[in-house]
Image (cartoon, rainbow, N blue to C red):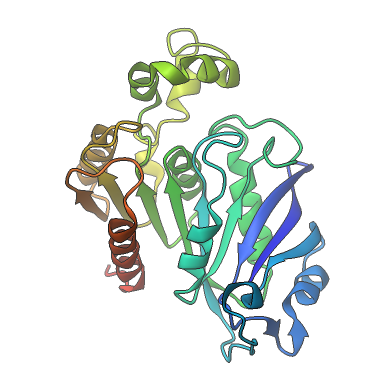
Length: 285
Protein backbone atom coordinates (compact mmCIF):
# COMPACT_ATOMS: atom_id res chain seq x y z
CA UNK A 1 0.00 0.00 0.00
CA UNK A 2 1.46 3.36 -1.02
CA UNK A 3 0.08 6.67 0.24
CA UNK A 4 1.02 10.10 -1.11
CA UNK A 5 0.62 12.89 1.40
CA UNK A 6 1.52 16.47 2.27
CA UNK A 7 3.21 17.45 5.53
CA UNK A 8 4.64 20.58 7.12
CA UNK A 9 8.37 21.29 7.19
CA UNK A 10 9.58 24.80 8.08
CA UNK A 11 5.97 25.91 7.49
CA UNK A 12 6.24 24.62 3.91
CA UNK A 13 3.92 22.02 2.47
CA UNK A 14 6.10 19.12 1.33
CA UNK A 15 5.09 15.96 -0.52
CA UNK A 16 6.10 12.48 0.53
CA UNK A 17 5.29 8.80 0.08
CA UNK A 18 4.48 6.27 2.79
CA UNK A 19 4.62 2.61 1.79
CA UNK A 20 3.36 -0.19 4.03
CA UNK A 21 3.55 -3.98 3.81
CA UNK A 22 0.70 -5.19 1.60
CA UNK A 23 -1.20 -6.76 4.49
CA UNK A 24 -0.96 -3.69 6.74
CA UNK A 25 -4.14 -1.95 5.61
CA UNK A 26 -5.71 -1.25 9.00
CA UNK A 27 -4.44 -0.37 12.45
CA UNK A 28 -6.45 -1.49 15.47
CA UNK A 29 -9.53 -1.88 13.30
CA UNK A 30 -9.25 1.52 11.61
CA UNK A 31 -8.35 1.91 7.92
CA UNK A 32 -4.77 3.14 7.84
CA UNK A 33 -5.53 6.28 5.82
CA UNK A 34 -8.15 7.30 8.39
CA UNK A 35 -5.85 6.45 11.31
CA UNK A 36 -3.00 8.58 9.89
CA UNK A 37 -5.31 11.55 9.33
CA UNK A 38 -6.64 11.27 12.88
CA UNK A 39 -3.23 10.82 14.52
CA UNK A 40 -1.12 13.61 13.01
CA UNK A 41 -2.22 17.23 12.60
CA UNK A 42 0.81 18.21 10.47
CA UNK A 43 -0.24 16.18 7.45
CA UNK A 44 -3.00 16.55 4.90
CA UNK A 45 -4.19 15.26 1.57
CA UNK A 46 -3.48 11.60 2.29
CA UNK A 47 -4.36 9.62 -0.83
CA UNK A 48 -3.88 5.99 -1.77
CA UNK A 49 -1.94 5.80 -5.02
CA UNK A 50 -1.41 2.05 -5.02
CA UNK A 51 -3.18 -0.70 -3.12
CA UNK A 52 -2.36 -4.41 -2.91
CA UNK A 53 -5.16 -5.01 -5.42
CA UNK A 54 -3.18 -3.01 -7.96
CA UNK A 55 -0.23 -5.36 -7.52
CA UNK A 56 -1.48 -8.92 -7.32
CA UNK A 57 -5.28 -8.84 -7.54
CA UNK A 58 -5.65 -10.47 -4.13
CA UNK A 59 -7.64 -9.29 -1.14
CA UNK A 60 -6.02 -7.69 1.87
CA UNK A 61 -5.90 -8.53 5.54
CA UNK A 62 -4.74 -6.77 8.65
CA UNK A 63 -1.18 -7.52 9.69
CA UNK A 64 -1.22 -8.89 13.23
CA UNK A 65 1.66 -6.79 14.45
CA UNK A 66 1.58 -3.69 16.62
CA UNK A 67 4.94 -2.16 15.75
CA UNK A 68 6.93 -1.88 12.54
CA UNK A 69 10.51 -0.70 12.03
CA UNK A 70 10.68 2.52 9.98
CA UNK A 71 13.00 3.11 7.04
CA UNK A 72 13.29 6.65 5.69
CA UNK A 73 14.57 6.60 2.11
CA UNK A 74 16.20 9.84 0.93
CA UNK A 75 16.02 10.02 -2.84
CA UNK A 76 18.84 11.16 -5.08
CA UNK A 77 18.96 13.80 -7.79
CA UNK A 78 16.95 16.99 -7.95
CA UNK A 79 13.65 17.80 -9.64
CA UNK A 80 12.41 15.03 -11.91
CA UNK A 81 15.91 13.56 -12.15
CA UNK A 82 16.27 10.89 -9.50
CA UNK A 83 12.67 11.17 -8.24
CA UNK A 84 11.38 8.80 -5.54
CA UNK A 85 11.52 5.23 -6.88
CA UNK A 86 8.20 3.60 -5.99
CA UNK A 87 9.53 0.15 -6.84
CA UNK A 88 12.22 0.64 -4.18
CA UNK A 89 9.53 1.54 -1.66
CA UNK A 90 7.69 -1.69 -2.46
CA UNK A 91 10.88 -3.75 -2.14
CA UNK A 92 11.72 -2.25 1.23
CA UNK A 93 8.16 -2.49 2.63
CA UNK A 94 7.98 -6.15 1.59
CA UNK A 95 10.58 -6.79 4.31
CA UNK A 96 8.04 -5.83 6.95
CA UNK A 97 9.03 -2.18 7.25
CA UNK A 98 7.08 1.04 7.14
CA UNK A 99 8.92 3.08 4.50
CA UNK A 100 8.74 6.84 4.00
CA UNK A 101 10.33 8.90 1.23
CA UNK A 102 10.25 12.72 1.26
CA UNK A 103 10.10 14.29 -2.20
CA UNK A 104 11.90 17.34 -0.70
CA UNK A 105 10.76 20.94 -0.92
CA UNK A 106 10.52 22.32 -4.43
CA UNK A 107 9.83 18.90 -5.94
CA UNK A 108 6.59 17.21 -7.10
CA UNK A 109 4.44 20.18 -6.18
CA UNK A 110 6.06 20.81 -2.79
CA UNK A 111 6.48 24.41 -1.68
CA UNK A 112 9.90 26.02 -1.31
CA UNK A 113 13.19 25.37 -3.08
CA UNK A 114 15.38 22.28 -3.03
CA UNK A 115 18.80 23.28 -1.66
CA UNK A 116 20.59 19.99 -2.39
CA UNK A 117 21.32 19.14 1.23
CA UNK A 118 20.68 22.57 2.75
CA UNK A 119 17.46 23.44 4.59
CA UNK A 120 15.73 20.57 2.77
CA UNK A 121 17.29 18.29 5.40
CA UNK A 122 14.49 19.58 7.62
CA UNK A 123 12.09 17.72 5.31
CA UNK A 124 13.68 14.50 6.59
CA UNK A 125 13.75 15.53 10.25
CA UNK A 126 10.18 16.90 10.16
CA UNK A 127 9.00 13.62 8.65
CA UNK A 128 10.71 11.70 11.45
CA UNK A 129 8.88 13.82 14.01
CA UNK A 130 5.37 13.15 12.74
CA UNK A 131 6.06 9.53 11.78
CA UNK A 132 7.16 8.90 15.37
CA UNK A 133 3.67 9.94 16.49
CA UNK A 134 2.14 6.96 14.67
CA UNK A 135 1.63 4.20 17.22
CA UNK A 136 2.56 1.44 14.77
CA UNK A 137 6.07 2.88 14.30
CA UNK A 138 8.77 1.33 16.47
CA UNK A 139 10.69 4.44 17.50
CA UNK A 140 13.57 2.26 18.70
CA UNK A 141 14.04 1.00 15.12
CA UNK A 142 14.25 4.05 12.86
CA UNK A 143 16.67 3.62 9.97
CA UNK A 144 17.87 6.03 7.29
CA UNK A 145 18.90 5.20 3.72
CA UNK A 146 20.35 7.85 1.44
CA UNK A 147 20.98 7.18 -2.24
CA UNK A 148 23.38 9.36 -4.26
CA UNK A 149 22.66 13.00 -3.30
CA UNK A 150 20.21 11.62 -0.72
CA UNK A 151 23.20 10.47 1.30
CA UNK A 152 23.83 14.11 2.17
CA UNK A 153 20.32 14.48 3.59
CA UNK A 154 20.46 11.12 5.36
CA UNK A 155 23.89 11.72 6.89
CA UNK A 156 22.97 15.24 8.03
CA UNK A 157 19.83 13.88 9.67
CA UNK A 158 21.84 11.16 11.43
CA UNK A 159 24.31 13.80 12.63
CA UNK A 160 21.47 15.95 13.98
CA UNK A 161 19.61 13.35 16.07
CA UNK A 162 20.32 10.23 18.10
CA UNK A 163 16.87 8.83 17.17
CA UNK A 164 18.30 7.10 14.07
CA UNK A 165 19.42 3.54 14.83
CA UNK A 166 21.35 2.81 11.62
CA UNK A 167 22.39 4.70 8.47
CA UNK A 168 22.93 3.39 4.92
CA UNK A 169 24.83 5.49 2.35
CA UNK A 170 24.29 3.94 -1.09
CA UNK A 171 26.30 5.33 -4.02
CA UNK A 172 26.51 8.41 -1.86
CA UNK A 173 28.29 11.75 -2.12
CA UNK A 174 30.67 12.34 0.78
CA UNK A 175 32.63 15.37 -0.49
CA UNK A 176 30.81 18.11 -2.38
CA UNK A 177 34.03 19.75 -3.52
CA UNK A 178 35.04 16.48 -5.14
CA UNK A 179 31.58 16.10 -6.67
CA UNK A 180 31.84 19.59 -8.15
CA UNK A 181 35.23 18.77 -9.70
CA UNK A 182 34.20 15.37 -11.03
CA UNK A 183 30.75 16.26 -12.39
CA UNK A 184 31.34 19.06 -14.86
CA UNK A 185 27.80 18.47 -16.15
CA UNK A 186 26.35 19.39 -12.73
CA UNK A 187 28.34 22.57 -12.11
CA UNK A 188 25.74 24.94 -13.53
CA UNK A 189 23.00 23.38 -11.38
CA UNK A 190 25.19 23.37 -8.25
CA UNK A 191 26.13 27.02 -8.70
CA UNK A 192 22.45 27.91 -9.12
CA UNK A 193 21.20 25.86 -6.17
CA UNK A 194 24.06 26.47 -3.72
CA UNK A 195 24.72 30.04 -4.86
CA UNK A 196 28.19 29.77 -6.37
CA UNK A 197 31.34 27.70 -6.64
CA UNK A 198 33.26 25.92 -3.85
CA UNK A 199 35.88 28.66 -4.12
CA UNK A 200 33.32 31.41 -3.56
CA UNK A 201 31.32 29.63 -0.84
CA UNK A 202 33.53 26.91 0.67
CA UNK A 203 31.41 26.71 3.83
CA UNK A 204 28.26 25.88 1.83
CA UNK A 205 29.99 22.94 0.18
CA UNK A 206 31.50 21.75 3.48
CA UNK A 207 28.12 21.75 5.20
CA UNK A 208 26.87 19.44 2.43
CA UNK A 209 29.85 17.06 2.75
CA UNK A 210 29.31 14.08 5.09
CA UNK A 211 33.08 13.78 5.47
CA UNK A 212 33.02 17.14 7.22
CA UNK A 213 30.49 16.16 9.90
CA UNK A 214 31.17 12.41 10.12
CA UNK A 215 32.24 12.87 13.74
CA UNK A 216 28.67 13.85 14.67
CA UNK A 217 27.10 10.63 13.30
CA UNK A 218 26.25 8.50 16.33
CA UNK A 219 24.83 5.32 14.78
CA UNK A 220 26.32 2.38 12.84
CA UNK A 221 26.86 3.14 9.15
CA UNK A 222 26.76 0.89 6.09
CA UNK A 223 28.39 2.16 2.89
CA UNK A 224 27.30 0.57 -0.42
CA UNK A 225 29.10 1.49 -3.65
CA UNK A 226 29.91 0.16 -7.10
CA UNK A 227 33.57 0.36 -8.07
CA UNK A 228 32.78 1.70 -11.56
CA UNK A 229 30.31 4.38 -10.50
CA UNK A 230 30.72 7.27 -12.94
CA UNK A 231 28.13 9.55 -11.32
CA UNK A 232 29.46 9.43 -7.76
CA UNK A 233 32.90 7.87 -7.88
CA UNK A 234 33.74 5.04 -5.51
CA UNK A 235 36.28 7.36 -3.90
CA UNK A 236 33.38 9.02 -2.06
CA UNK A 237 32.45 5.75 -0.39
CA UNK A 238 36.04 4.75 0.34
CA UNK A 239 36.88 8.12 1.86
CA UNK A 240 33.77 8.07 4.04
CA UNK A 241 34.59 4.56 5.21
CA UNK A 242 38.17 5.57 6.04
CA UNK A 243 37.03 8.70 7.89
CA UNK A 244 34.52 6.79 10.01
CA UNK A 245 37.16 4.17 10.85
CA UNK A 246 39.56 6.93 11.90
CA UNK A 247 36.87 8.26 14.22
CA UNK A 248 36.31 4.83 15.75
CA UNK A 249 32.77 4.59 14.39
CA UNK A 250 30.88 1.38 13.67
CA UNK A 251 31.08 1.19 9.87
CA UNK A 252 30.64 -1.60 7.30
CA UNK A 253 31.51 -1.45 3.60
CA UNK A 254 29.81 -3.33 0.76
CA UNK A 255 31.74 -2.80 -2.47
CA UNK A 256 30.39 -4.17 -5.76
CA UNK A 257 33.11 -4.81 -8.30
CA UNK A 258 32.56 -3.45 -11.82
CA UNK A 259 29.10 -2.03 -11.01
CA UNK A 260 28.03 1.55 -11.62
CA UNK A 261 25.71 4.03 -9.94
CA UNK A 262 22.54 1.99 -10.48
CA UNK A 263 22.91 -1.79 -10.18
CA UNK A 264 21.42 -4.31 -12.64
CA UNK A 265 18.26 -5.97 -11.29
CA UNK A 266 19.92 -9.14 -9.99
CA UNK A 267 22.72 -7.25 -8.25
CA UNK A 268 20.26 -4.69 -6.92
CA UNK A 269 18.31 -7.50 -5.28
CA UNK A 270 21.53 -8.92 -3.83
CA UNK A 271 22.47 -5.50 -2.45
CA UNK A 272 19.01 -5.01 -0.92
CA UNK A 273 19.15 -8.47 0.69
CA UNK A 274 22.53 -7.68 2.24
CA UNK A 275 21.32 -4.27 3.42
CA UNK A 276 18.35 -5.78 5.25
CA UNK A 277 20.50 -8.56 6.69
CA UNK A 278 22.68 -5.79 8.12
CA UNK A 279 19.67 -3.86 9.41
CA UNK A 280 18.28 -6.95 11.11
CA UNK A 281 21.48 -7.65 13.04
CA UNK A 282 21.41 -6.38 16.61
CA UNK A 283 23.80 -3.53 17.39
CA UNK A 284 26.68 -4.70 19.57
CA UNK A 285 28.12 -2.25 22.03
